Image (cartoon, rainbow, N blue to C red; front, top):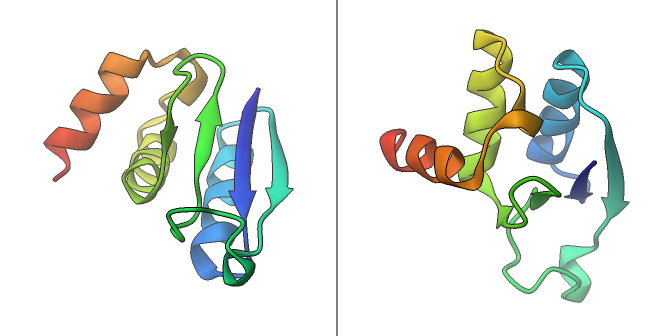
Length: 89
């Protein structure tokens, strides 16, 4: 299961849409960054039981690109996610 933290921002809308397109199960956890509920202040943080790490803007790019290429995020290992993030700058 993927946990997505979100606030009322455009990026917080894009990632759930991409996850829906990829038919990935996820849960949305509301986070108010104005009240300091997310220590980095960056959204959308997303965590997966497969990677056990949290990624932010880089992951959004991977999710967006993955939707275009039909990749299933839940099957990607932490190493693959890190390599993809590094390759995408």
